[in-house]
Length: 583
Image 1 (cartoon, one colour):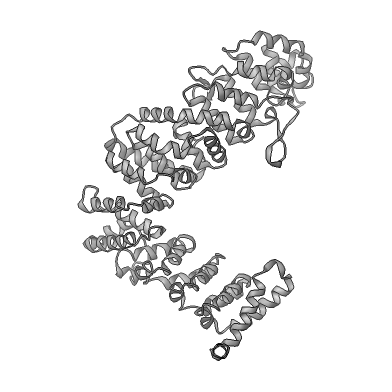
Image 2: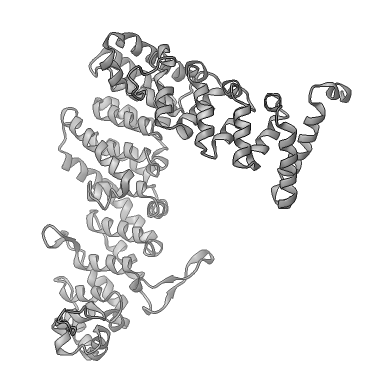
């Protein structure tokens, strides 16, 4: 056996590279200087023999290691030496990973050497058990827009594999534009595209981004009333395991297509589609693309009892502990937050923050225009019914998670919106939030798990803002210029006051002084007289907090003057100054 191995081509070199690889793979045990020497030796062995090494399963690891530790110039040398072999490497069980390592460094020169070698081979490679995955990885993560277009065009017709733009313009994968330019080819193109899609679906190879892009192009270019469209939709619904629809929810084109299917579908279609996502809603809610499928389901399904039973137990959890975990996870994930706040706040800036979520608004507008023809229920009524259905779970979750969420700005936003917008008995949730204000304002709140103690809620802007909003019984509406109160009133002042009463003056003179001011102004506060007396006895403390010289002049809001006549900003606690005025 040893003699046969020794007689093979490159036997000695392969044995040496194996020893180098064994040493290099234990990175933490190899000094930097030694690693550099080993890489240089490895690079010297494989240079000029790269193609021989990469096609041997026990030697390709050496080339991958060389790429991992190589300099930029060394990687380029490797990439150039392997030119002409990348399609073949993609079909190899082991060598395909080498392509990924070359492209992982996002070098445009290497990218432009590798990707064009897949042109003209997409139809074959996308059906190959090994090559299909690396091809889709390239399409999804490495290719630029023009290269993506060149790869996707091959789904439409074999001629696009060799066709070049005669007018010098960039190639497009937008099927609508292609069909407008060459309407006579519509039949063959649509048939070729449908056949390629169907082959992958039948093989259960449904996780490819390229497949989802192709499916989106097909659906948006076939007549919605046509037989072809009906057959296409049935093909999607016919995947009994639901893997196709689940995979689609996590890509841009796939989720967009699912949203259009929900918007255009019948009540039966929507129920069938929603059923496929059982036990997947939690994962979808935190995903960049998956969460919008949930938002569209909210907006188009008229049977709110069915949709709430299908979505909320999985999305939020059935026990208060599970809902608490969901809320804590949502506080750090904007997409998960949107799936909760959308039903409470609607399509507002508070819900759709950032460029990604702004894209969701455009998609929702598209769905809403379709909904006018395909849904019967009033949109406002649908939203209210869903909000009512989720309210008990959310209120229970706030009760359980208040002590944790109060330390996070988005956690406070979540709790505020839930308390303002949900329906039902809010007593336990309000009590849990008020309890987080216990203790001296200058104290720190211990946290379980060995984490650093948290600042007292009265010292945090988000905590004070939440308490102020709850005391005011609603959010300030900029358009109306006043607080938009909720009915029935929260009466949170009466819950909070017994908690902060021992430290009332410290609150009034501290960062959250506006909480106390809001209590003085609250119409539903039972102890306003008692608070006024207590604060009046400590007016000197409040004047000191309000700022230097906070006597009658400052307490009436008069600004000081600079020598040049310009007004100056009053230093000190603005809330304390307004409290003095209110006494």
